[in-house]
Length: 163
Ligand SMILES: CC(C)(COP(=O)(O)OP(=O)(O)OC[C@H]1O[C@@H](n2cnc3c(N)ncnc32)[C@H](O)[C@@H]1OP(=O)(O)O)[C@@H](O)C(=O)NCCC(=O)NCCS
Image (tube, rainbow, N blue to C red; front, side, top):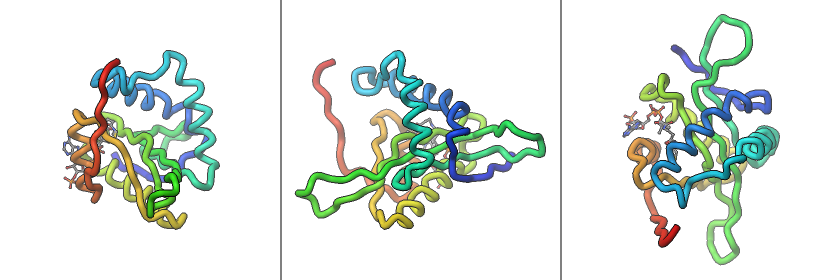
């Protein structure tokens, strides 16, 4: 089914939260010490995500399933990113940081994530932010494959000792 890519709004947030929950569960299964969220994280996350929709230095895109049916929108995926600032020892100051990227299983392998990442990189460029970063779990082969195909390079690994 065809997808329409557009900026996300606060009204999209309730449909996005189940994807956020799935995303965190997937990562927590890989390493709970690094990725497990607090049991009550959903409400706070929903507030944070709604604020991203109107923050001029944040980027929120959704992939909406094209349908003739009236609302509500059916969302196949989303991406959310913020502008972050490095401490002043680095040449690079501002950079875009991808916090979440999720495509519903039924819509994978059709280029949705690539389109969401491309739109986000372009949106940051329009903000004057020319570097975009993200973190991918070591065990997340699909994400690492995707980001490499989108032109990202792997530059660091996170090492954790203890719980
Ligand atoms: C990772 C994820 C976002 C990919 O979404 P998608 O819409 O299926 O990806 P796309 O169809 O846009 O694929 C784009 C590129 O990524 C690569 N890719 C996608 N899935 C892959 C996989 N399982 N293994 C290796 N590469 C993969 C593809 O090869 C494709 O490149 P190509 O078109 O040049 O062949 C999706 O699997 C997902 O939501 N996973 C769960 C959440 C997650 O891990 N998010 C990332 C957190 S950092």
